[in-house]
Image (cartoon, rainbow, N blue to C red; front, top):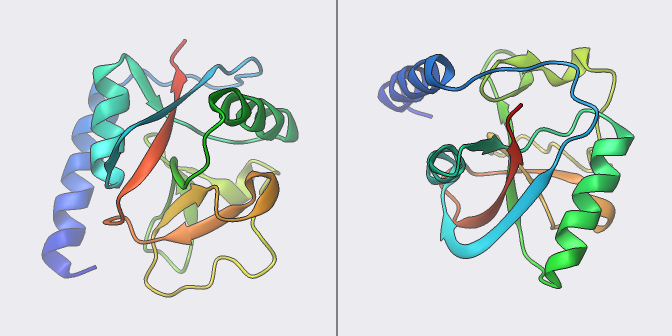
Length: 150
């Protein structure tokens, strides 16, 4: 990221953080897989918000199972943005919009070769089997997965 891009990202994240309700302790997440159009990470955040949802977080093995089921129901393959992104602080990955550090959730599902730190700051599923996580450029054009807000 350039300094200007980083500032813009922080402003966008702050504005969205203020406008999206935040819940914790979710155990019965409902995921919705959208493959109607390809968007970058910010487009995915905006699209989920427009549906009254938020970009998907995956904080447990149960979430991973639900995510796999949601993708399987579509009979589609592809790469999908989730709410994970690299905060830019020493490779610390967090969940958008609340900034919860992935390392503090006690769960991750990174593929063994990931994240590979090639200036890829967003987290996608679909490249590797079993919805294992992969880092990817936030400007890549992908499908996306949203979750219901409580």
